[in-house]
Amino acid sequence: FVVQLGESGTINDPAEEMSPARDKANMIEALQNVGFESMHIYDEGHSHFDAPWSYLVSFKDYKSRASWYRTSAEIEIELHKRLYRTKSGKPTLLFFDAPTMIHYQVPSKAHETKYCRKEDAMDCEDYLGIDPEVVNIPMTHLEARKSSVGEFAGRGFFAAQNIPQGSAFEMNESVKSFHVLPSTWSIIGDIYEWAGDNDDEYIFVQEELSSVVTFTDGYGEESTLMGKSHLTVGSGMNIFCNHGC
Image (tube, rainbow, N blue to C red; front, top):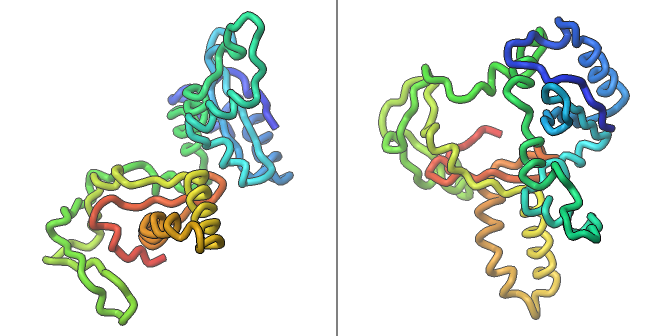
């Protein structure tokens, strides 16, 4: 379900529930009440209006988010497969391509700020980025070694010196994580299982993928934020930290 929301707001606007645009908020709430599980707002500035306009895309099935969050390469492939070529040889689409879709995937700062001005806004206080007041502990204060909680517990993360309560571990390194997207993880899983089912002839394929699957599945944090299963794996020693999941 796609609907235009009128002229895009600015970062100085109040929450829509407390503004003349409260009808938009009421419509979004109504869509949630009738079963739309995933909603995405994006701005478009090529509509030839006096200002950019906002649009709302809503999905009934949460898994549809996987299509919304496709990579640039996946989007280009879909466009190539599904669009008819013009007789003139000119592009079929004038204002849309894969980079444009990547831009649509993340709401603007103005939309995020207005959302967090709601009285019942969820998660805003927890996801505002890195708090400069939090003590950032370097990895030199920590060490990874065999865990002592059991025979098959694997490795653990231990303090090499006293660490203040409420500290964070190497926050600057968190941006260097490996992100295994839904389509990537699905392809790896399918090939790994296929090779296992045909191990007489293709056992070498499973052996080649074994270390990747073991590392990603063993140390990665699984999520369905993008609609289907995907994982994030740290690139440093912090992968040995027990997340208490």
